[in-house]
Image 1 (cartoon, rainbow, N blue to C red):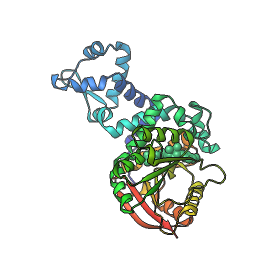
Image 2 (tube, rainbow, N blue to C red):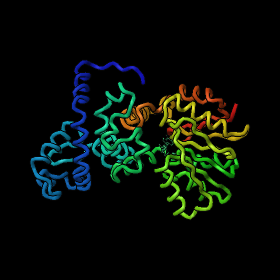
Image 3 (cartoon, rainbow, N blue to C red):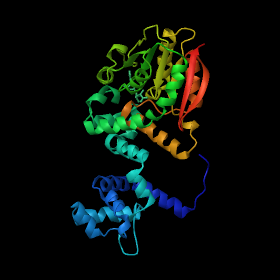
Image 4 (cartoon, helix red, strand yellow):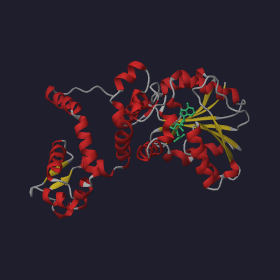
Length: 353
Ligand SMILES: C[S@@+](CC[C@H](N)C(=O)[O-])C[C@H]1O[C@@H](n2cnc3c(N)ncnc32)[C@H](O)[C@@H]1O
């Protein structure tokens, strides 16, 4: 990010915003959950809506609604017009209706909020200390399929939002390599496998994942009618000597390696190299912090790193390409193509050195 100079008065205001950020955040969560933002927006043509009207229409006690709207007005989420009625500001509008903002807000609230309280301990102990808010696991991936439906929904929506969009573009590259058998490493819910199988009758897929996710993915793909071409192998990449079976035509990994530390990434990629022939392509898709056009996208990725620290595993992050590419090379791979996918993603097409 470029260096900015700001006046002391503005810096103090910014510092206060940060000091009280959880208050504003939870105010936004509540006003959205209670339907206040959407009610104000839906009635925007009637010269705004009065406090009384909001309270009566949505059956929200006046005291609580009052404190929420006061905070929201100071934080510029709502504003009053000349008739003393409420209107949504642009920020309030995006908080209510922007898809990416909503996915981020639900993920922050439902998955990360309580766990982030343990961030300092997570940093010191190099463990996801916030995960105890959900259960006794070493990583969130061990417990993912056991999280409450609300938490799972926010987790999956966040995960899918940042990968679904590039699958169509990515499929074209995958198919251009003419594979008959693909390994989907970290296949999660089977979404990528489903798209591959639906787009080609010639392909078989083997998903490698932890048991909880693998069973879910296999069920999803079988339920969609592709049971004869989907296979699954349980794997824990954190176990001592993880191995892939030989014989695949292509290895696919999307938003997977960011779930691991630098040393673990090298270990995983070396296991891939051991299962690859000289011309087996390994396709890695990631969002790199140093490849983002907008500061805003980098901000989201850096926040995601803190989710990994406090909740996911305590050791991984969203990497800059400058660091990541060195790990790929260290594992014995060469990068044959370095492709931009969509707005935020990079695909590295690798082969054995
Ligand atoms: C962020 S998800 C990626 C999902 C999917 N590939 C996508 O593009 O949306 C990471 C996947 O890695 C798997 N994973 C995480 N840690 C693992 C481990 N130690 N062993 C095996 N798989 C693991 C998770 O279960 C999950 O399915």
